[in-house]
Image (cartoon, rainbow, N blue to C red; front, side, top):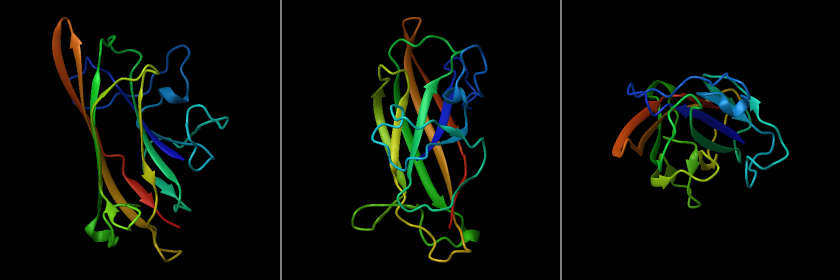
Length: 184
């Protein structure tokens, strides 16, 4: 299971997800813009399994044996940010293939009928009691048929977060392009 972990500071207005939280009590889940990995391919609950997360750092992700691997996105408030009252999140994750890469699909995800899924969206999701949002995108269903040719996908994560701050409904947007390689 691979997860892209993102932290946001609601007081920021630059549209960028925050960096890591490195204060007292920080954990691997306080890394921002990092790929994290669990050895179990598709745990029913990735945060309550006995397998620890491995930090794959920032940058391009290579998934060497992709078919059946699960990919998720976790979005959490940065611990240095202001307290939130009743935040809601709109999330869009869109995949695309680079023309130069000549990847035959826009995304490595597919429906049961084999149709490519290039965009995932979740609208108006209240912050769960656990204090973060987690969305499993899907299991990878498409990969290169050639052992020495990787499929390359670009994707963008975009959010709209709304919260009541000082009695006023405020909206912040955050976006990031983490890049992702899927290959054998």
